[in-house]
Image (cartoon, rainbow, N blue to C red; front, side, top):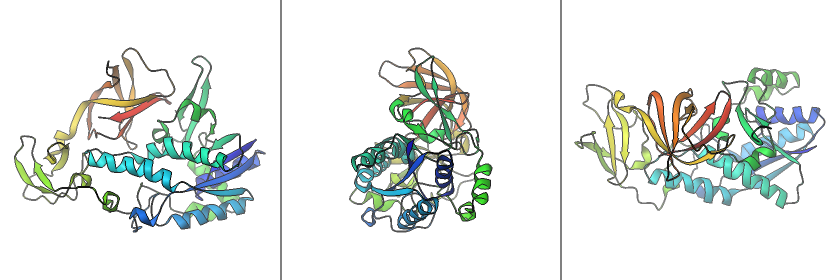
Length: 358
């Protein structure tokens, strides 16, 4: 089978290519180029997937493909990424929300435009694979493809893939879904890829701690810090610098206990501050829900959900509303339910679907 593989040059995609090749498949490495100096992100002071280190990453992917002896192509998606992911990132922060660019990138770019543009360039393939830690199976009872958590739950990336479609799952392979990360490292060492084991992996979206260049030309006004009763506590630097649950970088002093961002009042340009216990809540509304492994429920659904990647799925009840939203009530209070972030729904290992917290 001819398989196009999304390659980063790191250990996971490289070992994925090696495994597919040893299984007898013809593997074509494809790597997307998305960064431009025009974005304004010029510093690389932390690990991330978007920033000025991209030329090095492209070269690493090229070297890895050459070592593996497979065809490799760099697909330029700078414009698509700018108009989709970066615009979404900006719009979310300017609305007082906290975006999840990785989920949007996977849905629209990595499993969308990258595949489409590769084929438009005349590069033919039957299936698309990545080094994500997740699993796919076809359920004959429901006649649907299902997304499942990886066998290695410590590396599971199903949360970031929860907005994919049935059409995308149908052509996708996740060869690492049934494998432990330690086994991938062992494979790399046994095949003379020790250097990949030592290579640091991306941890965030931007390589820079300063995201302000992405908001060039936007009106970002300072405003008031207030407590939950509306009492002014000080001045903030603009809503784009804050997210629910944030403690550091507030520039507030004189409080007996640590203060956190407990809310963002976008219409009045205010950041609401309070003590940690005020971060807890047990209800939210989910919008734009993508039901993936099941059909959209017409009645109340009991399941588990996670409200961020580093969150253990918690029991909840999901109730469909007439306006297309879903009302979610958790069995116990959670900290820092954050508008704009993704909520993913699970039953055991199956990812039922996902939406945006509002």
